[in-house]
Amino acid sequence: MQYEGVLRKMQTEIGSPIQYYMLFENDFLNVNQVLDKQLQIDFLKHQCLNCGLDKPIFRQGFCKSCFFEIPATGDWIMRPELSTAHLDKEDRDLAYEKKVQLQPHIVYLANSSNIKVGVTRKSQIPTRWIDQGAHEAIEIVEVPNRYLAGITEVALKDHIGDKTNWRKMLTNNADDEDLVTWRNNLKKYIPEEAAAYFIESNSETNLEFPVLAYPSKVKSLNLDKTPSFTSKLKGIKGQYLIFEDNTVFNVRSNEGYYVALTIK
Image 1 (cartoon, rainbow, N blue to C red):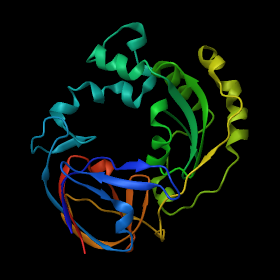
Image 2 (tube, rainbow, N blue to C red; image 1 turned 30 degrees about the vertical axis):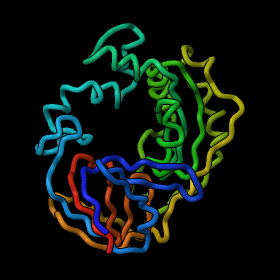
Image 3 (cartoon, helix red, strand yellow; image 1 turned 180 degrees about the vertical axis):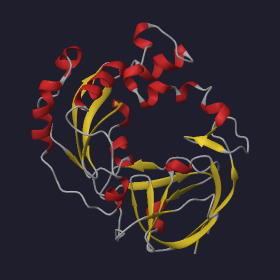
Image 4 (cartoon, helix red, strand yellow; image 1 turned 60 degrees about the vertical axis):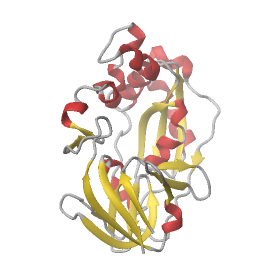
């Protein structure tokens, strides 16, 4: 069986375990059904997720010119504290920025390789946690816009990390933590502007990933260097495919790559 199309971030559905889907133009694949089967990945060309042209991918699935022009890749995406739509100030496209920035946002703690603080739109819970490979997570603050979430994250980063060790996450080498205690201990560091939005009485969410075997160590598949790859799929965690030879493939970091997937 073969599927062909441009790679995009896998879609997910909460469950025990989480269900993963690759969506193509005229078809989709439930990736869970490929577990313990041989999967061949062949890189055919690039296809920018914005202009659709066969141009080298620069970042986030976009060619270089699109990345520096479209509103979906503004600096405020990675640094929410730079959001300005609440001030009616435009970065690249004010209508788009208002649509994304002026909606409820969550500041959260997630544990994938270690406890980290992060920001996402409320509508992206628990998808954001799944994409990060977090086995447990909890909301700290729910605010009405992206700016308030951003300044809260910046304040909390002085007291807790904001990065995931992807190698540690993929080897499943992370201890369980009491996230309620962590949330309560961090309350005093929340900026005054966001203090009223602190969430007092929630519990952590636990997530189960479809993994038959974790790698003892990891080596990353680079399609530019290895345009054809075949191995048995042993798991899916975060946005990674895990193969039995310890190779891992980050689907999200390969958005914009047009591939053929063959299930053997």
